[in-house]
Length: 99
Image 1 (cartoon, one colour):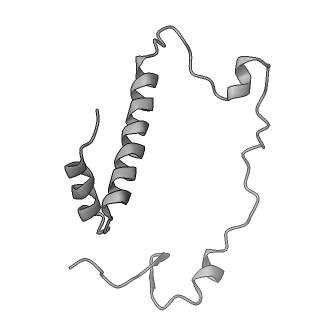
Image 2 (cartoon, rainbow, N blue to C red; image 1 turned 60 degrees about the horizontal axis):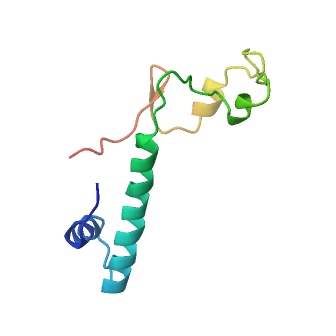
Protein backbone atom coordinates (compact mmCIF):
# COMPACT_ATOMS: atom_id res chain seq x y z
CA UNK A 1 0.00 0.00 0.00
CA UNK A 2 1.31 3.44 -0.83
CA UNK A 3 -0.24 6.87 -0.72
CA UNK A 4 -0.24 9.56 -3.37
CA UNK A 5 0.10 13.32 -3.06
CA UNK A 6 -3.69 13.57 -3.38
CA UNK A 7 -4.09 11.24 -0.39
CA UNK A 8 -1.76 13.41 1.70
CA UNK A 9 -3.69 16.54 0.68
CA UNK A 10 -6.99 14.87 1.68
CA UNK A 11 -5.61 13.71 5.04
CA UNK A 12 -4.19 17.17 5.73
CA UNK A 13 -7.57 18.70 4.87
CA UNK A 14 -9.39 16.30 7.20
CA UNK A 15 -6.90 17.09 9.98
CA UNK A 16 -7.29 20.81 9.27
CA UNK A 17 -3.57 21.11 8.50
CA UNK A 18 -2.08 23.48 5.99
CA UNK A 19 0.96 21.77 4.50
CA UNK A 20 3.44 23.48 2.22
CA UNK A 21 4.42 21.45 -0.87
CA UNK A 22 7.82 20.52 0.62
CA UNK A 23 6.13 19.39 3.87
CA UNK A 24 3.61 17.38 1.87
CA UNK A 25 6.39 15.61 -0.03
CA UNK A 26 8.29 14.85 3.17
CA UNK A 27 5.09 13.54 4.81
CA UNK A 28 4.38 11.36 1.76
CA UNK A 29 7.89 9.85 1.94
CA UNK A 30 7.64 9.23 5.70
CA UNK A 31 4.21 7.61 5.58
CA UNK A 32 5.07 5.45 2.56
CA UNK A 33 8.28 4.42 4.36
CA UNK A 34 6.18 3.37 7.32
CA UNK A 35 3.85 1.35 5.06
CA UNK A 36 6.88 -0.33 3.44
CA UNK A 37 8.14 -1.38 6.87
CA UNK A 38 4.72 -2.77 7.79
CA UNK A 39 4.60 -4.76 4.54
CA UNK A 40 8.05 -6.23 5.26
CA UNK A 41 6.91 -7.29 8.74
CA UNK A 42 3.71 -8.83 7.35
CA UNK A 43 5.78 -10.85 4.84
CA UNK A 44 7.62 -12.71 7.64
CA UNK A 45 6.24 -16.21 8.18
CA UNK A 46 5.33 -16.50 11.87
CA UNK A 47 3.30 -19.70 11.73
CA UNK A 48 4.09 -21.97 14.65
CA UNK A 49 5.60 -19.21 16.77
CA UNK A 50 4.03 -18.32 20.09
CA UNK A 51 3.78 -14.64 21.03
CA UNK A 52 6.12 -13.45 23.76
CA UNK A 53 4.81 -11.89 26.94
CA UNK A 54 8.08 -9.97 27.22
CA UNK A 55 10.92 -9.59 24.68
CA UNK A 56 13.52 -10.81 27.18
CA UNK A 57 11.61 -14.09 27.49
CA UNK A 58 13.13 -15.28 24.21
CA UNK A 59 16.62 -15.68 25.75
CA UNK A 60 16.12 -15.52 29.52
CA UNK A 61 13.68 -17.25 31.85
CA UNK A 62 11.76 -14.43 33.53
CA UNK A 63 8.85 -14.26 35.88
CA UNK A 64 6.73 -11.19 36.18
CA UNK A 65 6.79 -9.47 39.53
CA UNK A 66 3.09 -8.98 40.16
CA UNK A 67 1.68 -7.68 43.37
CA UNK A 68 -1.13 -9.46 45.12
CA UNK A 69 -4.57 -8.32 43.93
CA UNK A 70 -6.08 -7.01 47.15
CA UNK A 71 -7.93 -3.89 48.30
CA UNK A 72 -5.49 -1.29 49.54
CA UNK A 73 -7.75 1.74 50.04
CA UNK A 74 -11.06 2.13 51.76
CA UNK A 75 -14.24 3.29 50.03
CA UNK A 76 -14.28 7.12 50.19
CA UNK A 77 -17.28 7.68 47.92
CA UNK A 78 -19.17 9.96 50.32
CA UNK A 79 -16.08 12.08 51.03
CA UNK A 80 -15.28 12.38 47.33
CA UNK A 81 -18.84 13.37 46.43
CA UNK A 82 -19.33 16.04 49.11
CA UNK A 83 -18.25 18.85 46.78
CA UNK A 84 -20.34 17.61 43.82
CA UNK A 85 -23.22 19.90 42.83
CA UNK A 86 -25.59 16.98 42.15
CA UNK A 87 -25.59 13.29 43.05
CA UNK A 88 -28.19 10.59 42.53
CA UNK A 89 -27.92 6.96 43.72
CA UNK A 90 -24.21 7.44 44.42
CA UNK A 91 -23.45 8.76 40.93
CA UNK A 92 -22.39 12.22 39.79
CA UNK A 93 -25.05 14.07 37.78
CA UNK A 94 -23.72 16.24 34.96
CA UNK A 95 -25.44 18.48 32.41
CA UNK A 96 -26.42 16.88 29.11
CA UNK A 97 -23.83 17.82 26.49
CA UNK A 98 -25.20 15.98 23.43
CA UNK A 99 -27.27 18.15 21.14
